[in-house]
Length: 368
Image (cartoon, rainbow, N blue to C red; front, side, top):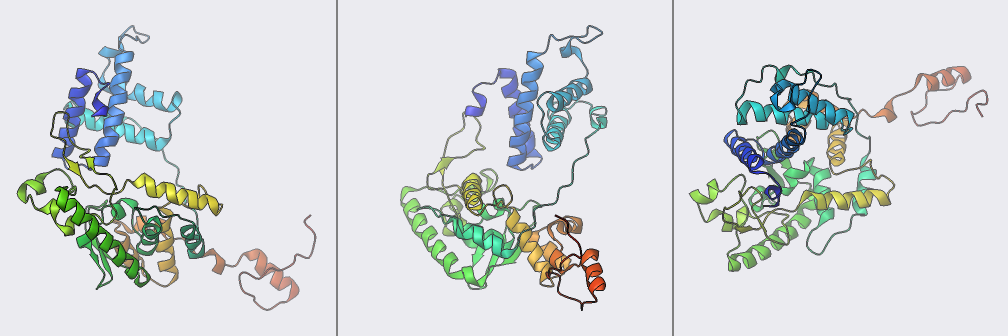
């Protein structure tokens, strides 16, 4: 694989151990990938600066683990100007390296102070703006990007949950989607909007046609995790139920395969960046570039449920959150129903009856 080509033998060994330990501890593959990148950059930095000496003329190669990690994290912030999220992710990657891969004492590393992150609120958008952007999305000959965006908005899905959706997880008859392989590692059910039933039925028929062609070529669908399910039941990747609802047009090899392993072609799910690009271009046409992303559809879904009277516990279950505090971040207050004290003062000044929150009252003086 390309990731291993420019690595030294020592780096390849560490990366291999990192991937093995990640699989052993059932870490998500995306987490292992992120940790792998930080570890590769960290080990390369150690190799480049191994002869650098501090004020006490001690070589960097002879420093304690805590000093190495602390200096590297400082370099990320001061020299590389990375954000606090990247810096924090690098810290946990190096902590995983020393604690589980190298199996060294990490008592001092865990005590390295962590930066305080900024708590940003997402953009407040409504359903009209969401539909306007979705209407500007252009489908490709293979992928119905507009349908995918409607599912994100209508079901409150994460983008990874949408891409992991399989044929067996869609029930048109019951207007239901079963969401598996979630961030919280717990399955859940979400209602399928009735207006999308016909479009989803057409998409499932396309999946069946693609499956019939792949079946003639003996092309399997990729399974979650490693090939454990495939070894238990070799027929699973060839069944219709395990086909992705939104798959790639071109088959690919297993991204988790190690160098030297047999490279088997799979029908994998669509790459997330394709939908992200389609939404970004549509948002640019609506002058919402940098404001509306695929994940913002999930916020609009939660907020509109709350505005329509849904309980927070119901929204938490539909979003798949473990903590209610996370759900409260997704729910935006309906500011249009709030009255400013300034509007109330103007009503009292003119002895006017109470008006709606959107009524514009003239000030008794000029502010030009």
